[in-house]
Image (tube, rainbow, N blue to C red):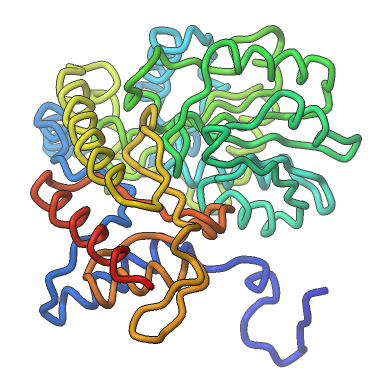
Length: 403
């Protein structure tokens, strides 16, 4: 039960959510760096590459053409047309323009959708580990999170049997990402097909498929669950420009959805952010319809970094890790080190381990508990190879000193 007092200056709904731990750790890392410490930040879910030049040129052209006015709430028609082309080209999904809504980042897209679908008490199934904001979004909508646990032994993937068992008459929504943040694991065609067969038997369940990392996939062609059977009629496919085009600060996300849900998201957005930044939208057209070579080059760089980090982490006694399928994260199991201590100070949780690595070894990581897993920490390899080698060696040293 959430307490709230008549004289409380802050609305009680804020007690339902917490600050994103990835943002909190990044903030702490910046503070220590400003104090002159040699911090290596592995908390960022952000490519360290510059936005490709042809995308920046499109933005400059838009400014010079005075395309600086309010935009339609759901996005300018030209960008929605580009998204329509992208969905057909990359995902074999056909959407009309009124099924596409552009928002201020994929996070905004997901929050719109959760608020548009979830009523108080509705159950939302979320596989663990999950992106930090999923559970808090459900909490804000006053839904009930139903988590499905995984482990490193299961490659951080749920089974069809687990999914089927978790569905009840109260289930309203299933929400997942593939490739996954934080594990980097991706569901295969056959795995998604098995899930789709279960959803076909449960027509009351909607699906949010977060596909923001689709172009950073090292092992397989990307697969969209909305392509299976009739699932497109109740799947909200979420994507954006931040990861594939290194456009994090431009804040462009979008959905392809059934018309009623797209309309609901547009209605909700009309009272929150209204239309997304006009210049960023024009740049988005160039990103989606332009040269994909910078995206492919970035993926190859991430693959090289993944292998570098994995090789070093694999040499650490007691640490368990697997080679991720995509994205730019590693999610090693550090349970062997929990319960140990440094200079007499016990380290019992992943939060305490992350603070130890930060304070004693100047590496910023994120506790797995933020992602629904108490045994792991998340490391982002979206930084230079030089930084990664230094960071991995610092982590290796730091873990070796725990007794």
